[in-house]
Length: 211
Image (cartoon, rainbow, N blue to C red):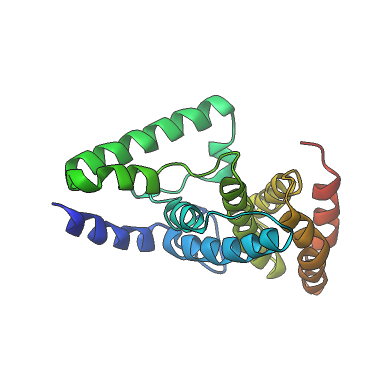
């Protein structure tokens, strides 16, 4: 019981594999994903600060490092499934939040429970930090799908993942999004041109796709 249980539970994130049930050249755990999201987010936040934004860095690190903790309880549900409808996504979020709350009540010392509720909440919202988390999360989806497509993985789901993530990113109005689309994505597409799957075409279709 107590914080020991929480710290031990973090090992479970290393064993939860993203995009389960599909052939992948490289497996990615939820734990590794969370670490990468933090790295993306801090750079995206730096870009926002260069354009005059005020970033709440404590909030940013809290929500990016813990944004997928709830997957300990429900696992990683494939993107096409959990986004099949807003109703399904809402129900899954309710289940995840309920189980996180139960875990906090059962295991976290009372004097720390409010802190854990803040840190383990769904961090994607309309705040600057919440939007940066959204972009960073989708960027990792782009890079994971890109790595598979570049190696010639013909699983259709990776095309869907790549396209959906780009569509989501391009519709978020932040300076760091413009930077990603103008400065980073072209390098990714150029690198992908050496693969057997037409990354450039998939990218162009995503960037012209309506929401």
